[in-house]
Length: 203
Image 1 (cartoon, helix red, strand yellow):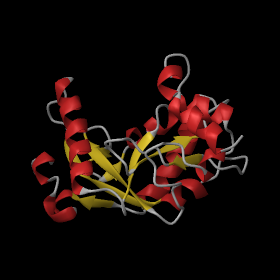
Image 2 (cartoon, helix red, strand yellow):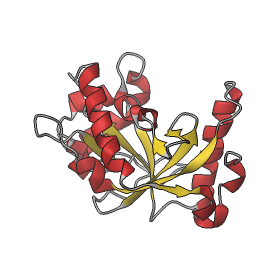
Image 3 (cartoon, one colour):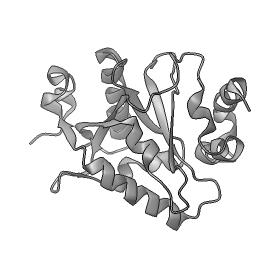
């Protein structure tokens, strides 16, 4: 396996999704987070460093318990399927993150979730994902630089799901959440001069 192999694997995800979840496919064909060290997108500026800070748009009611101000498991379940969308803080522009947040909210509302709104932003070091270990001592979450043409700072976290049963996936998810909770959430009003404030939930 090499850089070209990783690029080809990620380029083919749209075609394999119908028969196999992207997380399973990448873990099966390139195990042990092999592709973290390589560029996996033609639009990428390079692999994601463990020291980089990553951002995730957190949306109510899906991602967070407002009463407890804590993330729900739903905030990271995408890592077990299509990939958990993140943005590289040092690269993401206001336009890019604003457009992505609007896309998320508009899609949710079009499906009948009229109260969908931005709650805050999770800001966390990449190493938090990569340092989390499964019961067997191996890395449980991989982070890849999945840049898109219109989202050049985009990255994804994938859980190493191939061969894991649902109980193990859930155990890993809950374990990672404990670490993510320690980082807390940036309030909408404190993020980039209120960039997403009009997309926030009232109250």
